[in-house]
Length: 231
Image (cartoon, rainbow, N blue to C red):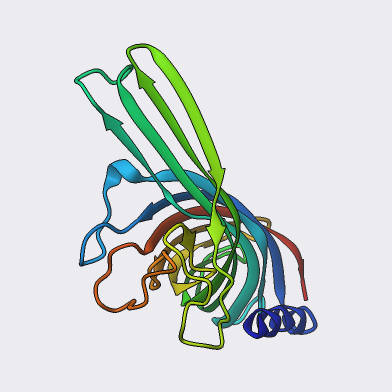
């Protein structure tokens, strides 16, 4: 929680300097790694969203720092077909947790014409799970059934190395990783693409994050930013 407060204060500090503050919203293509090397299955990609506010430490210099507060959809989906049919005899699962994410990026700008620029960004993020749903649709011999449940997070103390309140049916409350991306700042609109590489295993009972790269979030984002002001 202290980290959250620090970054929120950073956003406030940016707004008092030669800053660029913008609202952001877009689409996430979320997945979870399934191999020791961190690879994912393309068929498991889940379409969800991102939305929030971001602030850059300056609006015109080649180098800037960026921080913000985003609501991020994570997760994955799995479609299992019991026969050759894709319209019957299947189980479809959507796993969609929601996180409040606090990214801190190092931004490099390369100027283009008409006060626009191309930029590249990279930096760490921390995120806190707040809600989410897991949904299952089953169809067998023409009969359809649906079920859903709220995703649970453990009550972890982030200042310790243990996962307090860990359980097999609970996710870790806190996630962390690295963002890498880029885009175009066209003045009135900012176009962004980003890849979030999660570094924490998602289940609260998984204590060794470095043993392999299975069960970690992988998220591609495409977003649009609307500047509020430039100082």
